Image (cartoon, rainbow, N blue to C red; front, side, top):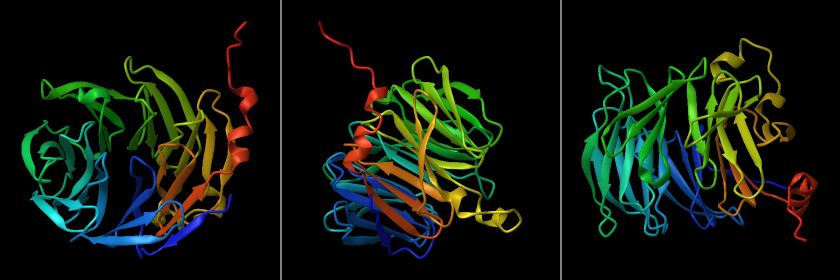
Length: 329
């Protein structure tokens, strides 16, 4: 498996994201740029220039629109093909997270807790014909920084992760907080879904990733890496998860550090065993994303490097003896 290295961004990568077909890769970074690449070859198609650090982005199901959330307190809607900014929504403070709902009729935006403003989850209506956004409603603030928010199955709930280690679930219909649970000792950095959103995985600075049942919120498994976890990718094809992270840049200078702590690690989602690891980054890994067909994944790191890994045929065969297939008489 020979990775394709994409070197364009001069500052840390904040998110890597594939479109629904998996043929396009979007990369957001702290150098105020979002770049667009072909997945198969690593050829660059173009760049979208924002006015501040791009913290998050999402692309519509038909790959027509790209939305970006940036530190200049703006949410922008872009035409993917032409690179033209179609619409801009201004907020009071930096926008930390953004995501289309299933069906692309609404987006959620998370704004930061800074300068006397509370951290909030906003829901905006999205017009698919024109690409225009209109503010709909805002949920009550949890009184702590929100690190990430994502739509639940069928857009009934919004799941958010906080700096206090809590997962908060908001009821979209009632527009209120539905449930809160805390099982991490440090901040939860990200929530990642399995293919059909039956389960979700939380990544935390306490070095653990926890798997939960979406319906019952039952804690199913804990994956402990012993180092902060910033991101995870869940394979839509195999029962595998990839965890990425590492000590942040400011604490690396005061502790013993080696390249092995920035490996991305493969775990079996059922047995919890570490299957292997991959060296590729020389700094913390900030984002991991699988293509929808599960045959390729990309990683983005602190040093501004993105790697596209096309998985070999041997990867899809190596643990077939562990897969339960009922025998038909």
